[in-house]
Image (cartoon, rainbow, N blue to C red):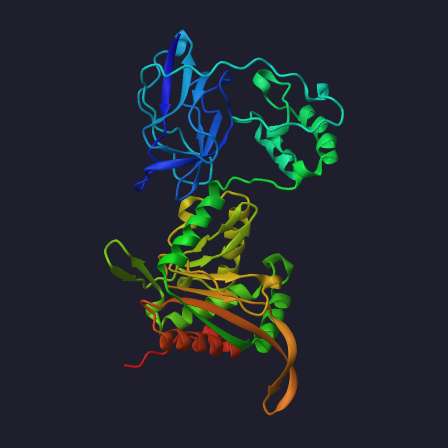
Length: 424
């Protein structure tokens, strides 16, 4: 028998470490080559890592939420004699949310053996009736599915006695523990949720953006009555096969026209070099809520697309983001972001800039209400645009002028389809 140490692969673009999101194997398991063993996350994307060899797992490094440096031991396999000649190096996986190719690995000296399993603990059912369990120290051993069940049921896993090998908590242990903890309400008053994976990445990026960028917020009221009429007409004329047209593609198309006159808002700031990178192409980030948190897939070269193409691309990217199938290339590279809360849009919001961009446009809820229109009170459909700008590089006047230009396009929707006429 020989051992093979698989090290955290280099996932590209200057990645120095990766966070453990979920292990799909544990010491003692037999795994086959190419079997999914662990999910990790870099600052760019989630990556599913397959086993580079077949063998028995001796030890793993890190728990969910821990970061492991590139090149550090990640998992140790015990190989059979037939597999002893494992390759010294393998190709790294693509940094995408889709299943990855085999990561890089390096053969190394045998690692420290896994901690021997503790004597199996008695089943939770053996606890005296009505007794309040005492929290135990150390790592709780159970499957990700059981952790989710416990979280949903408000069960504190540290108070559950596991009946599996080494005290591992089984599903039957949770079913036994649920009634007991229900009788002791103090045990379920609070739930601790470790901030890991995408939620950690979102927290870090939002904190960094709010800390480093002096946000200038600007809210404007827009009469979208005519835009709504156009939207309804287009939906009726295209039929159901084309998919429903929302406000979002129309706003994106209007924004593209407006940026022709305000190129200073289609900019990325390279803080390391102190350089503003102005883009001719418009790569629009579409803030998308997913079960895992907020993602921003990118409609690339939106200026070259028609309205229905933009609408179709937004739907495609949103679906891929929500099903965790979006590639890294589909989630990076935006030059300006549009965010919409849809029916939950409220009256106004203060969106946080998607650094290194310098502007973000937010759509609030469109509602019908009485307003003064052409000298009389009329019922009109009104929607607020909530925007934020990086005040270091976009002056308040320019920010306001840009939103006013966007308002003009949306209130006269025929102009959405007319390029800006530049004076010579």
